[in-house]
Length: 157
Image (cartoon, rainbow, N blue to C red; front, side, top):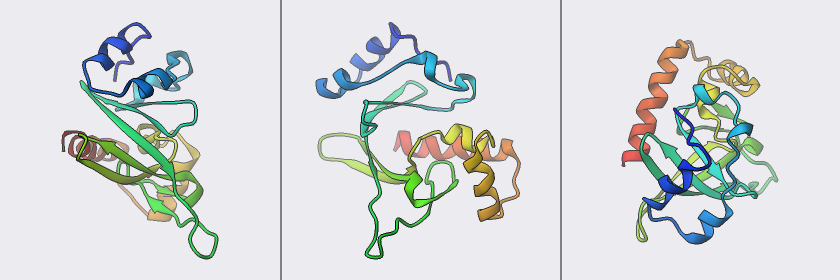
C-alpha cells in the first residue's frame, strides 16, 4: 500500500462522508509508520486511539475501536483476530466497529494495534506467539493471501 502524503490525505478523506469531529481529531504522521511497504491497509486514529479511518485500496471507512472489558472474573479472554487470524491476549484485543452508513455498522474482534499486516508477515513478537498457540503451519504468502481475502470481505461488505 502506498501511504498518502500529508497533503493527499485531506483530499482522500473529503471524498468520503466522515464527520468533521473525526477529521479534526485524526493524527497522521507518515514518518512514524513502521514498515510502510508491508502494509495492506492503514488505520489512522485519533490521539486516544478510539476512532479513526481505515484506508484500504481506494476505500475509506470510518471506525470506532474499543478495548474489550474484563469478564465477571476480572479477566479479558484471548481472541483470534477476525482480520489476520492472529491469537491475541485479552489486553491486546479490541472491538472494531465499521460505520457503513447512519443505520448500518458491523463489528469485529481485532488486534488492538491494528498491525495485522505485520502480524501475518511474522514481523512482531505477537505473531510468533500466535503461531505456537494456533499450531498453524501455513506459509507467510498464504497468510498474506488470507488477509487480503478477509480485508476485501470486510471493506467491500
